[in-house]
Length: 202
Image (cartoon, rainbow, N blue to C red; front, top):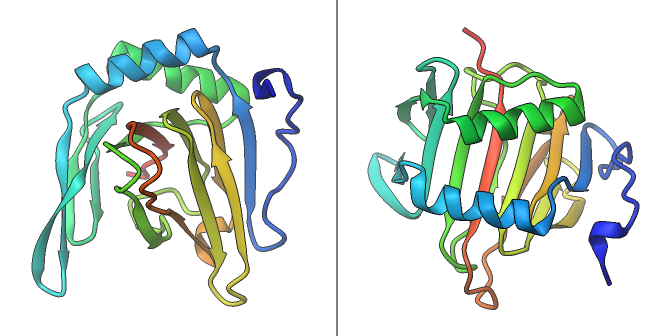
């Protein structure tokens, strides 16, 4: 089945209540997505992520990078990062999703998962640096992975498959009422790069 040629309703809200999640499907051709995946793997200044949990410093296998229009400060898991300047390629992707979504972004947190065994635990992106109830545009490259949401009160779950070159947008009260995660799996051996475009409030 060629999902690229399927019509995906980008206005459909995948959450039953208390937030908005829209899936735009593939914004890029396979050739374009392959180009960006190669660029991201080779040219981004990746670092192992650090978190301080219960006073103990944890170094993740997953790697991260933080870019922005200015050297924005971003703090989470008791650590602080300062944004590197956007590259031309990241700016091109930012422009693409801004045009598609009519949203405005000024920064991007990138994640590199080397295999399916690397994932992300349940969390919400509610850091005080971020625009409250602002949109987060999530571009995926590489291995297709399952992405899950869980309502904080009802525990209801919603799951989607994020494709190579696809866009997911979380906005409104999603971060207030829902957790999300990238479940690990031993079935996937290829890397996935995820770009989450955000808005930092100064």
